[in-house]
Length: 180
Ligand SMILES: [Zn+2]
Ligand SMILES: [Zn+2]
Image (cartoon, rainbow, N blue to C red; front, side, top):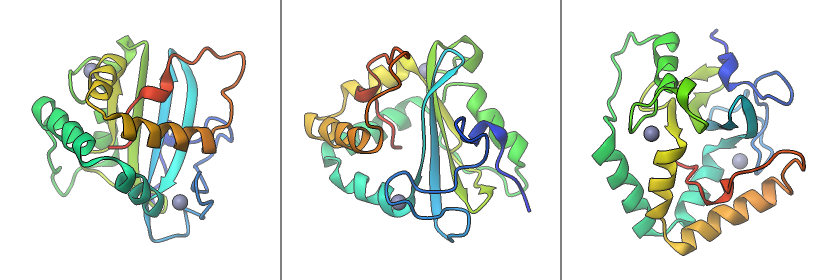
């Protein structure tokens, strides 16, 4: 049985995420896929969560069609979303988060970035994810989002992450496109 890579562990608990941040469903024992996303400012993890596929679908449905189109256009214009070969290892898949998906900037050179991965149980599912997006590309992407989509995301963050840790300076993280 493969293990969740440490880069996708919860910073808070130092262990794999166990529950969906939105509906609190248990993730490891569920047969459903889920996404783990972490946002960094420098070396500091400023936000992290796991979201089950049901809750993600819910959010997707609330996003405007125009925003979805803009996001996909952006990704297809800037990134190669390819299916990996069948024997692709977890280690190989993890190398994908060393570089920005869309501009190729190294993670070690990014001030802010976020990365996400797709999991089922304790297995990482290789594919277009895991992916890393640098702050500059995130800004480009959020420019293309409609106001209603920004509202959906802001609401999600407000409900699930009430109040940022006070001593951490959060650089306008709310405007960012988190769900891909
Ligand atoms: Zn959920
Ligand atoms: Zn980039």
